[in-house]
Image 1 (cartoon, rainbow, N blue to C red):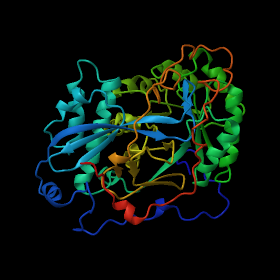
Image 2 (cartoon, rainbow, N blue to C red):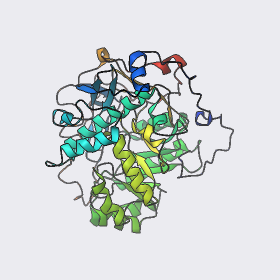
Image 3 (tube, helix red, strand yellow):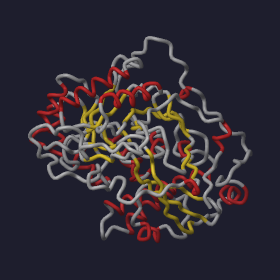
Image 4 (cartoon, rainbow, N blue to C red):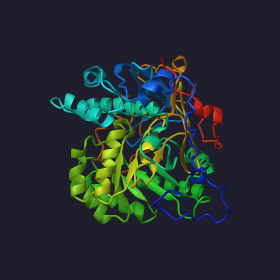
Length: 467
């Protein structure tokens, strides 16, 4: 079930979930086998406390094929293919750390890491912040720091010979999740088909994209609730409007939806920095207000928390593991839950497993980017993390796919470009955002999550195999 949100209303027997199975550690002294694992000289150096050094980095790019249009109230990628930046951090011991996310400032940030021991992750995180403080550590710089930070945590766990969730102190490999299809461009039939696949994997919560037409949002929320109802009598429904409402209308539009649908939370109802606006929505609504994925640095969270403007604190996967851990601690100090926003390969799931105030993690797709495999399974309504050291991400450089020019998130009609009339609409927007006619020729049919497949044990010992 979606922990902390709803009671489990199942009336039929449910097989024992994998999250209840004990973690069986490997016998002491048995080395990990496979390229990239902490074997041989690297393992001995780590065990003896000898310092390993960061020697360089490499920047790669691949794509994620969603099999459906993806986007939100700000725009849509109709072709359903988006770019995925991959950052590899290399050491003199032969291990390579994998980070994901845009890292356009890598050349500027790397001198803060060059020659350092990768195990000092949190110290190096602050070192990267200090290295960029004059010009500011938001935007591209903060994303670059997040990608390096993720790769460093991957290295730290690989050097310890254990999955990152173990390194971070988690006791359970299962991370509760909710389904989120970036689905605003799907018609009703496609929407039901998509979430039927999630329901088959045990999900009891879903987040829909909306904000342009409340009547359409209400109908879609109700349809998805019916799809999930076999798993629970009270599905957890979230609506993400991606800052598309203004403060002058957010309370009114949300009230219209709440009169007909019970929501678990409303996400980014107003601009991300608008503490008073979030507080006004929260005071008028029955549902919780969630935000934070687009905030960088603790200083941007403090005004919203001081104003008691959020009930669910969110973080983005591209900002890194250390950022999530610090935001989770800040939220915990305010007795608030934390919920990571989804990203490729679900890297924050490892940290979420160790956070005492983790509520639920967004899961956007069951597939992985071209050339990447991940030691995890999407089942039982969440993420089941594996045993491979580090993040469990394997990079096959020969299988990476180059993005097409003018494709992906940065398109002018895509969701990463804010429309001029966002927050200024007085009447519903006709139809989903983006091109009026969806491009279908040459594109795959709607990708629907199929039955859960648990990787074979032999697959769990794969290692990141880049040179």
